[in-house]
Length: 123
Image: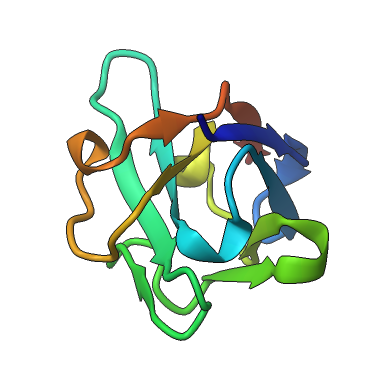
């Protein structure tokens, strides 16, 4: 079983930066595709970004393209989501999730999930 734990959320002003972390354990880190999703109360969970097991392939939602960067550090078994120029509409609970193949960006395509970390962007 794969375990994922998100951290790094918080309160930031519009235009600010924030980096989220997803610590992965339970399986070889390089074997897992890891994605980031976010959810606002009353809305469905939506895809944000995904990275392949080797880090060689990434994909982003149109709403965050050029502002967010997903990366992974094998030495730390951690996937990051670097966010710049944050907007109020980025406010949500952010989740990381894992699966074995890169194809598919819907929540149902992912097998294991973390508990989420809150990101709030003011102004």
